[in-house]
Image (cartoon, rainbow, N blue to C red):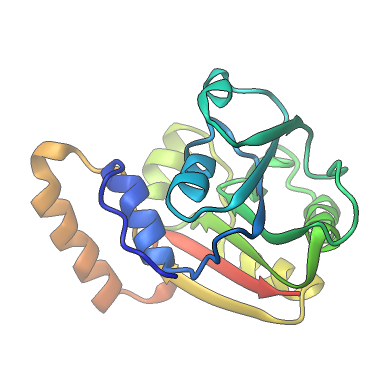
Length: 208
């Protein structure tokens, strides 16, 4: 069932509440590029999912997440059989898989691996920061060097691999606590008045 998260940090609460995805308890999920495991912990604790995670390195926090089954692996050779998972989830991962070269064929190869391990009738959820979002571009792209995708490219590669894709877009950032009221007002203005082209997150929800 859909549920509203309130007990995590502001960013995680916002991400999952705006994603608003109906995860079914007991289903099997693969968190690709699981990082510190913070998303996987939410899958386990809040949604009752059977959670697996892969990443190219093992973060020190993962040993403290009860129930997470971790394997060290990249996206190009996911170490699971075909049609293993009910859900496959990626949060700000796709632009990292070839961040310097941004090779189109590598992006497609990664997406095909996601498709391979998802069950027939399963769903793949891909969240990616939008390159030209007014906050992401100066901070994440210019200052920190993240090579986020343009929205047009994100939609293009999804359409090249998947046939049943639903897109959604929303604003979500980790805001300074002392000025949260200001940033929440900014967020509402962005989502109501600004074209989707500039919103912070591009999300593809894919049914296999």
